[in-house]
Amino acid sequence: MEHAAKRKNRYQLLEEGLPQFEQFIESRENYIKALEKTIEILRQDNVQSTQNNLAIRSSIDELVATQRLSNIISTATEPELIVSALIELASQVVPVLDCNIFLFQSTSGKLLPLSSKSSPRLGEEAQHQLEAGIVDWVISEKKTVIIPDLEHMLSKSSARNFVIVPLILRSQGIGVFVIHTEKAQQEFSNQDIQLLSVLANQAAVGVENWRTYQQLLKANEELKASQAQMVQAAKLAAIGELAAGIAHEIKNPLQVLMLHLELVQAGRPLPNWIDMFSKQLKRLSDITLRLMNFSRNVSEEVATEPINVNKALEDIVMMVQHEFEGNGITMDLRLDKELPAVGGNANYLQQVFLNLLINARDAMPKGGTISIATSLAGFHVSIRIGDTGCGIPKELQEKIFKPFFSTKGEKGTGLGLAICSKIIAQHKGELRVESEIDKGTAFTIFLPVWRVQR
Image 1 (cartoon, rainbow, N blue to C red):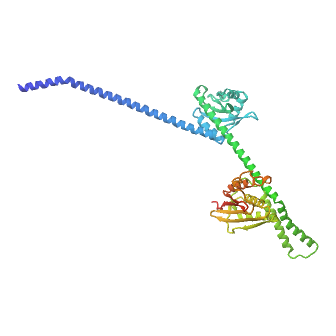
Image 2 (tube, helix red, strand yellow):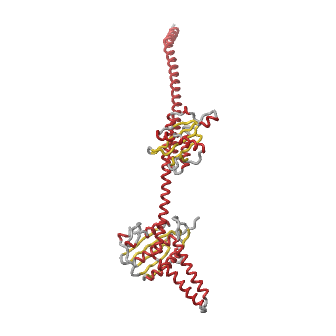
């Protein structure tokens, strides 16, 4: 009986718990379904997020590429770079068959292509639209037009168009950007037109920068030519100051030759007269050659070639020695015979030496001594030219290398030392001055030792 009662209690408990168990199973199934649905939603969100990230990354890459090409256009110094970058950018908007920038030429009334790589057909079309008044309308209205390619339309079934975009710079039209494309007219959106207009504006900036760069190059060439003329004028002026001494240098061997020639013609026997004639003629030839080499006009660029500084100094001293000695000036040369060569232009350096010697002469109107010394100072050759003249006041020593500043009053041009400083700088050297009132002035030049170019 007791066992039967226990079994009955178990059945009763099962019957009472069954609904709760079934409810638990149902809840669990619902939970699993909800969980699966949540997972699916999250998976879809993840896929969408990945796609969005890829789209954003692609857009960023396009923006970076566009910015890079835009920078190329606005900073290019070559027309071909402007047009090639413009083609690459325009190709992101329309399929480009041919493309070029055409600029107005005020003198001829024609459109000139910026690049030489486009087809003659594109240039002919641009000129035709100019003559038809379309280009003027595009510029005045600042609007882009799309014109059918009639020639292609007559011979082919597919359509082609010319897109003419105005190039506007500070509200002024400077030309047009012409594209030949297969894109149908009805497929162009307002966004396409706006993008092409932005590219054309960027190209206009690039064209202006290119023109400015060309003007700067021209101005630089003119400045170089002007500087070269100034250097040459200063050189010839220095020769003019020494004309009397140079004439005397030439006159001396001529007088010796003429005297001996008269003796020979008179039948007077002269021992070794042929050697004497040869010596004097060589002397004349050397004087003339030195003068011609120094006075010739040389290019603004400093040629890099080895120069014997001692030889360059000796040639200049021989040119001025007679005239200086006539003014009571003694020349004291102390040249290092083991001096290595320097690199540069001997003609330019001789002009520096001559200017410094003339300044030393002018500082000693009653005579004195000019000392010229060369030596090796580390990796530089040192050339010191000093005088025993009146000296330069300390407050003026910083000004003497400035153009048009002179301590000689109306007699000086103020260009000599400025040109000297410029020439030494071109030779990658340095020009220094030391001076003391009533004791004299010394200019020291430091030039790099010549090294064999490898």
